[in-house]
Image (cartoon, rainbow, N blue to C red; front, side, top):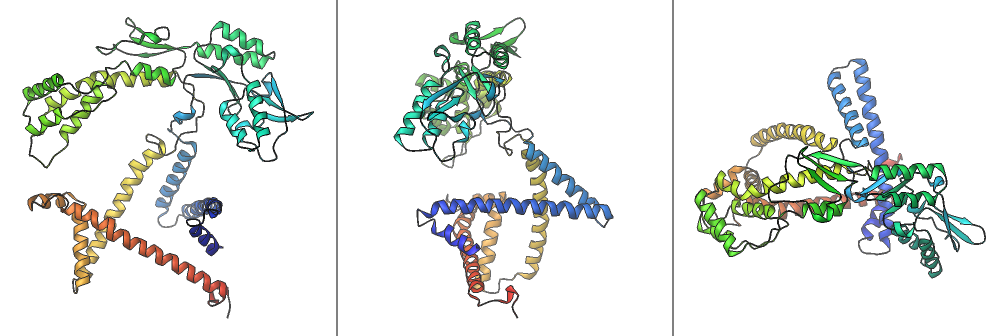
Length: 503
């Protein structure tokens, strides 16, 4: 079985029809790997629990291992500290719970359901009714229409679902602002719901659950969210197009928004920052003069300012990028590093405008948001519990373990390894190049020897790792694969039967 799977996966790289088989085999491999991990985890628990229970030697280490295993497992499963994925969150929409059964209306179209399995996006919403008609409960979204079209490629089916999509839409005045999500079992509304919008929605249904959901949406969409802000950064003002929604109270020092903030509103608020257009000659001269007044500035650095012709979203980001370019070392000319006053000057706009304003807008953006898919984020995302465990527990422990291992390997190699022939000498020299290339000493030695760019010790290390090491790794993997194939063939053909229990 292993041999056949391996041959199929190899053949899929050369035979297009075998690609689907490769995907199926990969799925089964993932299933088997998951089973192996579960069995391995169970075995780990059993062995360590027995050791702790019997108070065997080293049972304290077993307890630490067990606690670490359970903590990591729980944090990973619940995605502790992981933020929901932004693409699925529908910022700017309010949400109220409403089961599919309580959605007040169904919509019909002539046609029959396809024989294949329907998309999960319309699960439970699409049904067959009498007289060769299909019914849809809820308001059909465009992504549901596209998913239904993929179920069957016949023109009759496409015409049917297109008519059904056209029929199953919300009231005309609310199109694009109200939606129903069967997966969330929720009614959603975008922006602020007026009293007129509320009455239109209440007239759409007749049951109590529908009325409760509409009233809850009206309350949520009209909620005012506030965050503290000492003052709007100098030179900035709130956009006029959002004057009815976003306000700033100078007395209470509060920035507020009426209803949830959408992605478009967030972009509009951030767009009030001055545009980072390409520097004019006058601006270039001013920057050069100011930097020269604050400290030494080389000709190369002045040329870098004159040649900086990039456009950015804001002046602060543009000046910050210019700072990074001036801090980047160059081998063309020895020039002084920027001092703290020069760096503060270039970063001042970003620090006093961009950083403060964007952070506050994002704070209000998240404060006004109602989470839709709480577990949709990546469990390994930066800031999550698993990320903290990996960065501040696993990485230091791994580094310590490999440092100890490297010490013992180095001491053993020093005693046992001798450059007795050409091959051993080349291997020893290569090892020293890789070792020096990974530490600061390699760079310092290259500078002392005035080695040209491309021929330094770090460059040599990169060449060794990318060429010789890669070639060796591939050769080993090919050898392992050929060994597995040959061993499998011997067993299948009966050439080597000792492992099957024969005499």
